[in-house]
Amino acid sequence: MRTIFMRAAMARGAGFFGFWLLLIGPNPADLVAGLCAAAAATWTSLRLLPPGGGRLRYAALARLALRFGQESIMGGVDVARRALSVRLPLRPGFVVYPVRLPPGPACNTFGALTSVLPGTLPAGVDHGALLYHCLDVEQPVAVQLAIDEGLLIRALGGTHDDT
Image 1 (tube, rainbow, N blue to C red):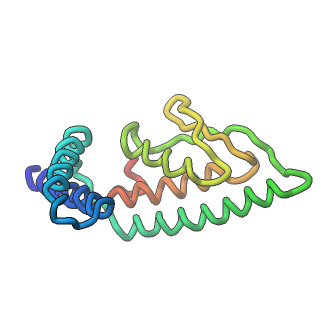
Image 2: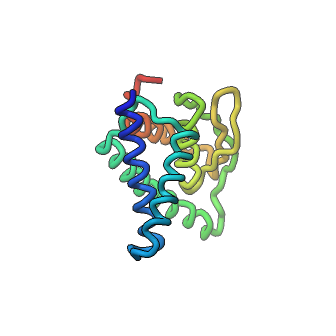
Image 3: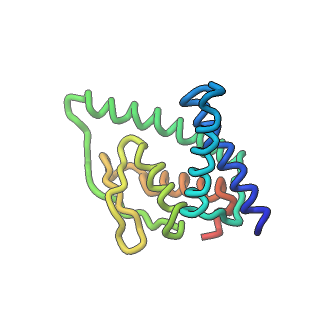
């Protein structure tokens, strides 16, 4: 467990310091402040979100990112088409999606990920399920959400059957 903690601390510290360098630049006069800020951010991060035993699967994460990009473009085109249509073909409503992820960071990540896709918006929780507001409830929203959730589960180191 200690090696997982140390690996997480090093990865998060490097990420926070890299972010500092990206924002401030590699000015030697600012490096000490950047190291202090990265150390404080790392400590806070480890306290608020301790490292778990799971490992991120980068190939699955790449598939999720690719699908996210494709769905964002296709969804944006669909929303624009509906907005520019004279007849405005909308059938707004709510879809209840029975999420398989347990409550916590992974489920919150899923909600955040799906909140930026055009045409759907997480609107609440209903007895362990996520409630989505949709522009067109006749679209296969739940099917699309299940695909996205499965990809996220695999990217986080689980299998489709884990939850």
